[in-house]
Length: 69
Image 1 (cartoon, rainbow, N blue to C red):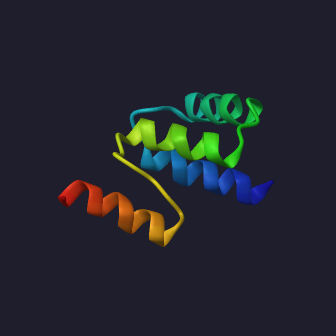
Image 2: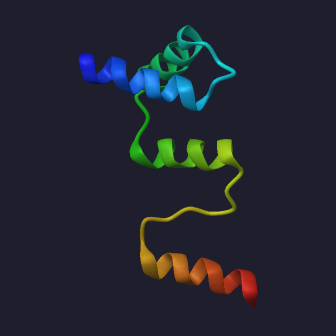
């Protein structure tokens, strides 16, 4: 529990415009939805505006090649 509180404090500092209660609410909503790993990655990519995401190096190369060709 102490680690979770410390992590929450670090997260709150990283998003200083949000108060700790709002960050906790957002985390609880996200975790409560019980997303799959793929859903979590997709949501994170959409949130930050990423053009693509992969954990597979070969797939990443193909994505980049598509951008430059």
